[in-house]
Image (cartoon, rainbow, N blue to C red; front, side, top):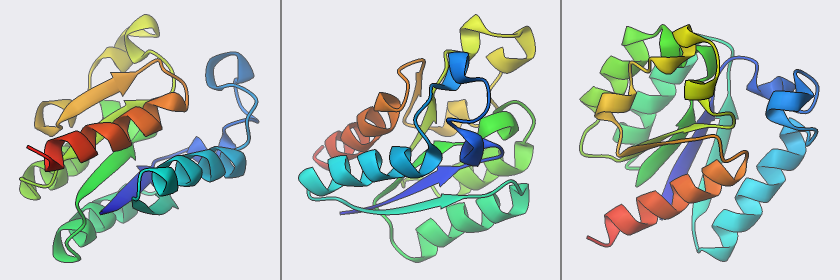
Length: 146
């Protein structure tokens, strides 16, 4: 099984920015934990991060054409603004996409309560810290077994 893990704008700053919200673990250490968990589950991961919306759209489409089994995606601020990412997720159905947020976006500013992509995702996991990425991997594994 092969899962793409996508992170949007400013996720590379985890451990540096707003530590009270995102924690102190570095982005690099977060990826190590995600990849370690995936390996234990027999899953190959391809982790990518970009601050550019078009890169994320291209990678979502690439997951389709390269026959990935799913995507775990934290679109960052594009969650609340990007119709392009939502359309890309919708376009690659039936490949499951799990939207993950380290913080609970519903407990933050009102504009963060809206996710354009969530209606097209298998599920949305929010507020579970980096553990949410592991839960996203599990959700994709479960979906593939059905």
